Image (cartoon, rainbow, N blue to C red; front, side, top):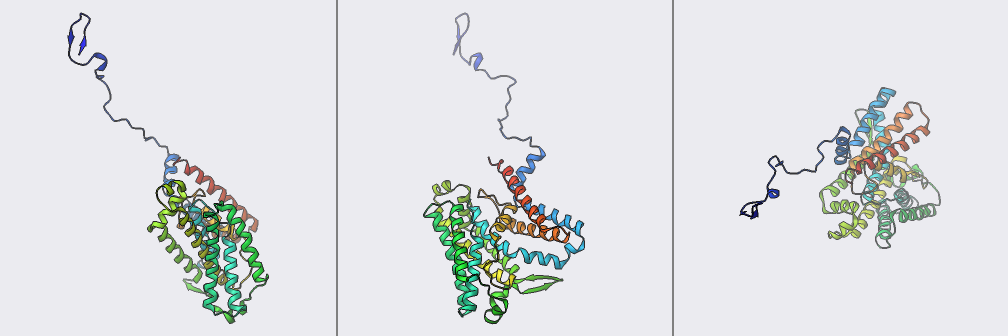
Length: 362
């Protein structure tokens, strides 16, 4: 009820309560529907981060095919590239698990070398039965990974510091146990040929594919299934995305991290087995750049260093990119320093793209 100027009263809404005749009746929307091409690309890459390494790999293969010619895309050369990246790709799988939890493992290469030294020394020098020596080598990697996990979960050490310390410890144990001596190929052939089986190759259309490459794909399939089809995999992604939020949601993040580092250690030991087949010997000085090479494959493959986002497929493609660049530049006659330069440039570009993509979620 409202009053007029002459004092009379009438029922109904006052003037200021009446709706505007031309008022819009649509529901308010705050979504930005006017995305430009760059924004669309940014959102696409955020939803499909594996697309980046695939695009880079395709461009690299096309570029080197034009520059080098048929020598590059010959079946024999492509088979060699796969053999060269096998060990790094297996280590990259272990590193991917860790980086998905927003951590990093600087000791993967040292675990690999120590484990393969244990296998070789026990089987050849100490006369252990090959199955026992091989199993103890795998156990060595498992224990090293569990040690990393314990330092991070129980002592609350940052992964970078914890694995930097164990990297030195494992390297020292490697040199002490091996006495800096190499187990020669002939001795392995005589006492433990099984340790070199991953270096055996099969011919497919002129390309030589080693058993180690097949092993790499088997490990990738198993870990992919674990990450994408199991509760543990969902816990790994949740822990890497926001550990505190995952803990509040009821996830045992300590057990998740412990499992991740332990599994990573086992995978590193398997990489050590593949390394024996690749090199043909057991050398305490092999794989010196394996730590950084594994991180390179993971980063170039599109896995975020901040955790929670990435894929094993991207890591395998990242390792292939490094192999393609190394092979292409070598066939083009460029010095090895330019191979290192190209890989370093790829790392910077990959991290810059990751930072740009992360702005979507921010």
